[in-house]
Image (cartoon, rainbow, N blue to C red):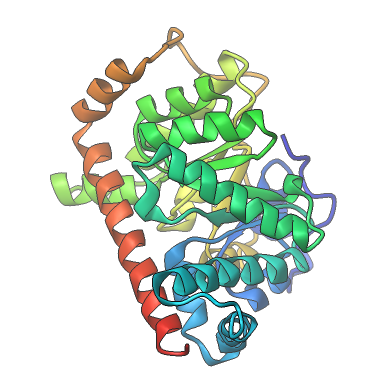
Length: 331
């Protein structure tokens, strides 16, 4: 597991901010493609996804990155879909390289979500991305390949980890997904908090807060299970809707946080209690093992996880198509 950052985020307050306090026991990660935000909040790592890259690439200040990727392929001899795919991969790498100039740790770069049910395709694309980073002098230890937590994605990650390519399994909503990731020996998982909260709020019409939040409860359960049974897989809570969800998971291995919520934490004083402690996991669960049949059944039994995983893959795939269209308009 990564060490907690040895530096502190700067603060406008004489007292330490909640962001400073959080960094005492959780590795803070920036969930953005915005370089200025990373420089301001000094995270250890950064995560990107197709939607964040699309948002950034659509802004004038980042257009030069896409233009650079296009220009580099003018004499490549590629055409059509192959050209767009090559430029797209280069855009991901160029964003990653810029991020790695800012963060001291790792960047997560996502495999095309349209490969979410293609184990061999995911492995091949991950190896291409790692080779591209290595060509730029970046060690694979600084890269996490981000893959959706489908059975096919988890199996791809299992093979990649054997080759020393570390993976971040995203779009994770169900306990079954977390169990399968741990058994596969993946480096890190990104269980989603806010999207679980969204689903339950819509389903029940109820408001949830703090330790009663179903997203918080889900990540806490996974974290405590991993620590009880000695799994090395890092838990990185993701997709937050409010600061309360973040403070309720203080002590989690990592939390990836959007710039708006990082700002709220930085502007808030006051004590922050460590809620999760790996040395003293709160878990009365027995150890679970899942083969493919058991995984698929358990996952299908979870209506929220089934719906949110599918929705997430569709949304990321749609944004990849939009990014391809943006690139095509510049070629």
